[in-house]
Image (cartoon, rainbow, N blue to C red; front, side, top):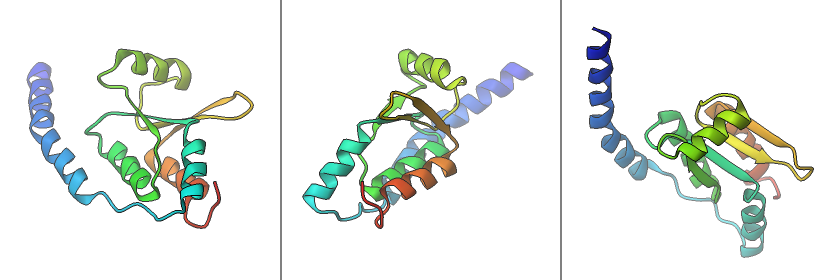
Length: 133
């Protein structure tokens, strides 16, 4: 019975994935407007960030939408399809759970931030309209 349920939910996931991805494309917000110099500073700050995610994960989509809204060019690492990224996530963060934002601090310390709401709050505080990069 367990195997039947597993394949049932895999089938549901396979059927819904294209719908979820199209819905994401259609509902992604416009990026904030910044001057060229300000956007360059934001882009430079984003080089120390990486988002570990699964493409069709609704919580990952939530974070990607916030990234789009804030105009952030953060490296996306697929922990579902890329075994190297999956291993990095497990080794560095301690668990294979997405979304996870890797923040590499200037002192070399790495911070692994889980939970979409926490990530979005951090991104908004760091890169929101009223903040300087």
